[in-house]
Image 1 (tube, rainbow, N blue to C red):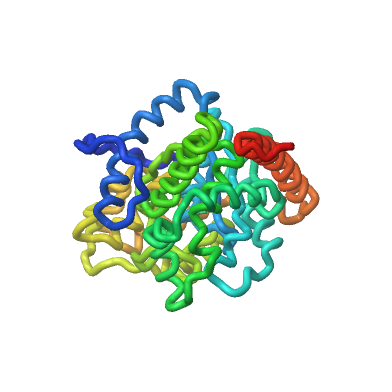
Image 2: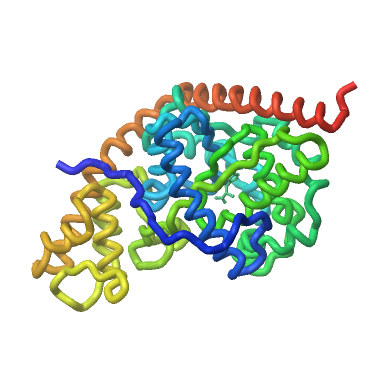
Length: 379
Ligand code: TRP
């Protein structure tokens, strides 16, 4: 029997010689430095969280742009479930307004939100312990955007590498005002719910630095201690690639959906890229395609990549694919079953979202009141 091992692998790196940061990274070098600092701090944070989970609140989220795949499951979602399991209060924002930052039309956003809720619940997010909400259902969150926008300059936003990367990914679109201000909107998501810890990958660090900057500048202008500066819990870059060895994404056709059927899993794995060497070994640098399949099997519960390689040895890529298919089918079965039950129970999913929206709205309302009081707007 295999079980779903969704514990992200830990990262350990040497401390950086650089002192505390404080600016939004604006190029690859400053992003490297920010990453190094965040990495160091993450090691300490993990210990603090494990010791006193009640002191922290996680705020994390996604844009509802499609069903989750196993790359998300073994990466971000597993990390959310892990933090929930440690006893940290967790808020997951479904950033529906942000879908239109870099496209003309969000499509059926309601369905996309429902799908995201179903996938999270199926993967182990427990609505009794965690809050999942739609940010369009929390008007107070967006009202925070106005004072927050006054705290950053257009030049700062234009330098944000994440904004630049997101614009580049649109393939030639003009920058929309919503995309340019995405980091400030994300600051509103985080600060409205008073998240103190934000699990992010390197690519999202600039956005988090903008959030910290907004909180610091607000406090400096209007009153110390109004907004808590959240910290990044840096997760390593996802080790799980798609079946062709490039970044896993639905649009690239190299992903396996969280709710894939055994047939779909088998077909996808059969088509996965390998190499010409018969004996299976775990050599990530020299044999990236085989290494990726070994890691996938490992995340799905088959043991360490080295153990799986040793087990397959001279039996070749066919045997590796058979083992990977079997392990994925078995580990995803409970997720698929839970998702199917939820799909037939629209009322339950709607209730989870409604309650989450209410809880988030309570937080955002309180934060907005504090902000307006600090700004001496309340008559
Ligand atoms: N920008 C994030 C992404 O593209 C999604 C997101 C929106 C988010 N609001 C957030 C993440 C708040 C963390 C916190 O993945």
